[in-house]
Length: 327
Image 1 (spheres, one colour):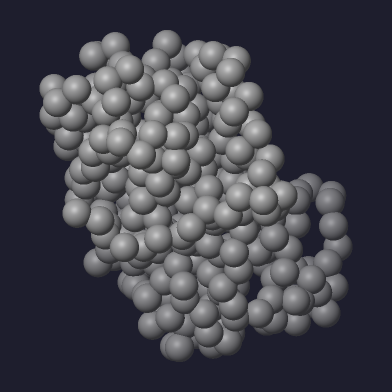
Image 2 (cartoon, rainbow, N blue to C red):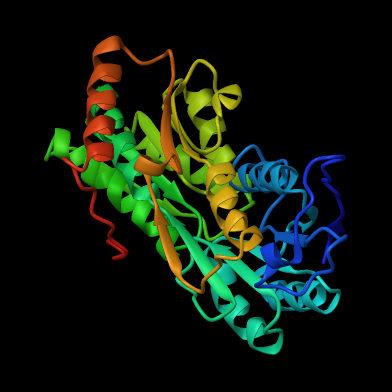
């Protein structure tokens, strides 16, 4: 397991009482120790970086001590969790659906440690999951893609077919077809979170078949899809983070997953003693997800997308969360 350590401490910020930490055992004069576990690099300009930066911000706000591990393979997750738990960490965060089952497994052995997972459905006395409505951003991006295509063909590229990724690709397709029922939506799965070459090859195959807008949700792997779009001079849509720097002349928008909001809520509950083992759903209305539109978009497309976003936030439009793997 590759591990890097970072401490984020407020120098003269807060004095937190023992009562505030009623869910964990902690001395009055010691900060809570938080560990963040990531499937990729903490500086990937996407899924993992937004979690790292969001967790760091929340830890700074609450005066917590943060360490993190990056580039964890699925087989490494349980041992990473156990390593932190046995090293007296109070809160362990796994970023991604694949961390849910290992959290439940290890949590049984360490009942005094709190486990928090993103995009999982794991819940127990000391396990909570925070699920973002990423399907809402995927739907808006599908609408934008359908309004921008000239060929009538758009593409979505994902990494591994887990629920949290499938719901995005399905919503992208649904959004595109809400604009044009006859639009052709091609999909591909790379089976990797980090191999940029695989996404680049998948995108090139789509482009050869006439696709002129590509959206990805493939973590760092998806950066390869954006590179292929730039190479071919077509439009692309980013994911997790503001990815405009990767394709400044080709990007239409980026789906933002605001982990600063999500982890502020999650860690805030730990700090104030209100933590519960539950699955919490957060969407556009809470600021957990949003779509950052590029200046490359024409004004009429921006206006239509913003109207849709407003309708999703108000509840007038409900985006269906569909975990079905479509052929």
